[in-house]
Length: 554
Image 1 (tube, helix red, strand yellow):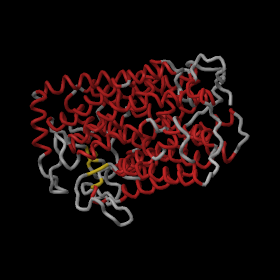
Image 2 (cartoon, rainbow, N blue to C red):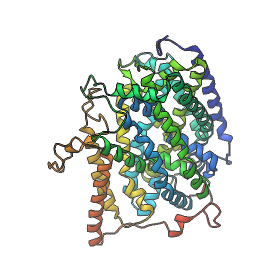
Image 3 (cartoon, rainbow, N blue to C red):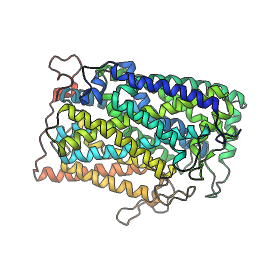
Image 4 (spheres, rainbow, N blue to C red):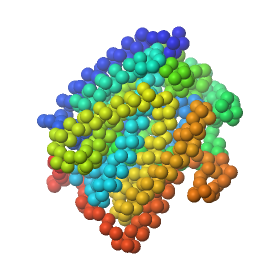
């Protein structure tokens, strides 16, 4: 039976059993390491700020290495070749870059009771406006990422035969997300933290089996690379140019570098990444994790190679019955379906499906924290009690989840993948106000706002101008901008060049330049720069300091 053409009962049964196991764990998590009450954002949204090294490792790993990563990175390698490996160097350079800022963010947040990055910005600059911009950026950039977890989950469901048209075709996805919403509402961050143990264990088993078993079955790695090189060199029907290459070309080398660096700078600016850090017990936990998390980069490299394995295995993507288009995200699930016994394929699909739910839960909690602390409490109800804050966050987490489901129900999933490109560009524009502010308050808050506006506007405009001939999209068609298309008020400094670059990196440079210029002007005119409520000692506080603020106190 061809993948996706009929129900695979063995795979589906194993998937359902494992899904029920993690559902039970999700509800039981409310009692795991619980305080007297979860009616406080420190408890519901940050797990009591007391996760140790192992829990944090699984939580942050489950947060950063998502089902979309497991599905889409191999799909990009399958379709374009070497460019898809940008994800590997960026996760290698990521941890040395964020090691010290993550420690400082934990310390100042623990000292001052901050729950979100926008809380820190509010305290550092005394600017509700700047904090609001950071909060809105975090929420908007997170929404498509939650939707993208659904893309990975739907790819698995489609491969098991649940590939109907219209709303009925999305029914299994809705059921899965209703269950996710219920146990997240009850248990908060403890639910994905506990489930991450199961998810990561399954993922490691599946991938290690895959990278040894599949190449042996397909003639070895040498044969796989040879077949992939020949396949990628064939012209694409939509462009007439080679589909890709197993080595980088002169055209995409700059894009590869800027995409890797930009992605590394962006990843720990996302609110869900910060949430994983703030839930840690102390600085030592974060230090151990920054040393151990690169183990996931090794896993990611193995996953990316599955794109070449799929080429050598003759894999064809399943057609999405709802849209009539080939779903490239089904590449890895179809590979597993074709090459593994049904029982093991069921385990693999459960690993990917659960891998979608863990980060989706963390992301919705992080977005809910931003809404509650930096919009609801700041602008709608300043006298909100901790209990009211927790209730508001629970409701907001439901709204965010079902807003993400709306992406899948009412928009072509390929378009929601295009939106992922916006996420990186958007969140990069918070770097000066969040990451740099951890070290210096030299930037003026007006300069930071001006830089944010310019970086955001230019970054989104550059993405808007990129077409995708393969999908017939005229806008938001990719992350590769020819530098010849860069325009500064009508001036094209690199006119005619086909070398490509990542727009998010360009927008960040513009953001910083504008922030510096406006800051110099504001300082020259001695414009007031707000009050800084933080102190130097806040950035070095640790879990056993005698004057540390108790958990659960504003």
